[in-house]
Image (tube, rainbow, N blue to C red; front, side, top):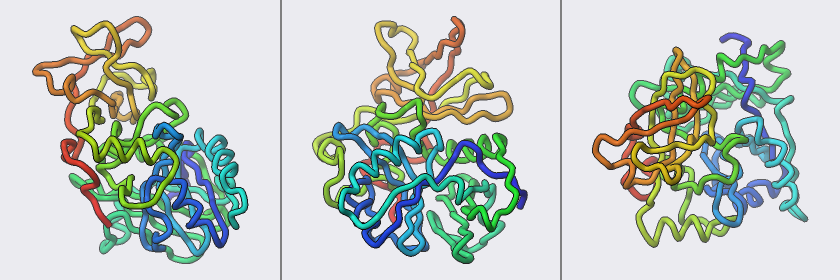
Length: 307
């Protein structure tokens, strides 16, 4: 494996004898029963149920590593620390201590790796296998800086990882989309990011109400647009023939081969209209595209991928 590491992703470490209990009370997924050989997706929400950040969570002893876009780490670390109070744990930006390498094919490295599994070689190196789909068996290698040695940050690695997440239908919150979406609007509940049976956490009442009292009215869909660098997460998405207001927003962008591969938050009624076309405006020019379904059943309720 090369020495290239992700440049746009980082790590928050929450450490201490009460770290699991603390995170369990703050995040959308169950953390107190997280084994060392599993990964869990989780969101950190505000009181209105809107996501402040999203994480891949992995544990080693009393250390809990929250992997997320580095642009969100300062605010998330500060907010988590505000809620720690007397809990016997602490949260810190550990991006200088731990770095990540993109693993295009976990199956080539660990042929027997299960979905959403963590494989610790020792205390300094862990291979994370995401949930495979459609031939994509991507993952990450989480390594301490001492084990990695001289690392070279690479935006190419970032783009490849973001594209793998796109193909797996896994959204994430970036600095541009903080507080824009509730978990259901971006399919986070469908991919195992929300546990509806655990106790309270910030925004839990809103998230649970959307789940139990009716069908989700918004979901995230896929799209491909021929534009390399100008499209950003958070941009308004419009629908042809509906000009009074945007119908959604760009959730994530992955750049590859001159195209922008998007996840787009959109109302189900608008997405279902026959021959519907959607637009993004870049420098006064409308980019037209269609939406396609994510790589799982977006009409379902709750996670389709249990541990």
